[in-house]
Length: 413
Image (spheres, rainbow, N blue to C red):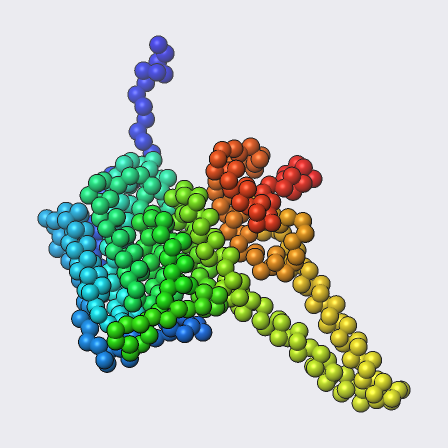
């Protein structure tokens, strides 16, 4: 045996020694009260503010906030504190669900914010617990310190029960028939379930957002009206849809990720919302262009003396209109045929340019899913196999898209 093998190992590096010896900070107490955010209704929605007038006609039990965490928790364990917080959230949730009148958006947000505060405490506890495992786990978690979600490992039974109950309470609030799902409520619900790692209810909730009957204000008993799911106001916000899709990808649930895309990116409401957001102004300018061109041409005709004023107006009008039309055509083709943002999923041949522009967010979401389920190494692309991958490839093909087009792969030009 060599002397090198018998030589004692050197001490660990100062960074590892600092990390292993550094005690995690205690859970911060929620000294600041839960914020009172005023829910804003959906734009152009028929069920915007449903409960303001009902407050005058129907008395409603007062829903109190979840009390902030006390700072003197020296003897109580973390689980006992979480149990106490859970009981407070359950009490406020039951108070909301037992109302006979239409709950206001403010009360609904208070319940969900209390649930979100408890989820943050649970996530923070798990992050501190994972840092106790050693220097290696702490170093590996440095790049993910900003992500507020429960670690991938299995929770202890008690904490898992608390997580499941918090998820069920938030879901019961969303499913409560008199509750109107505003964009703020939907975003808060998605944040709660994403932090808990439970994306299974997102497709159903997204369908409820567009199809859930909203209560008529002032009705006794409560009556409901059926909304129009194709209105642009009923489109899922892109940030909320992206967060839900990322939660499904992190949970490795391919079917849920596909259903989220179907319920958010592919709807008529999403297409109409994109046209209003990005295409309405250019389309209006293009429609007004002939009138503006004729006005400018008539003024330019007065500045010349070489030909008749009417003929000069026609010539200038034709030239301006041709220039505007040619420039707009080149711009539209450049925007709709751009493919620098595409990674693995591209459009099949024959897809109209209008559909390519309208469905770009859908293609980008599918591209993200394909990149998450496939090999990360570029040189291994095309070697994936299995039932999930075959189902994903077939699903992409039915949407007039192609997965890993051969002529666009590296080395296949």
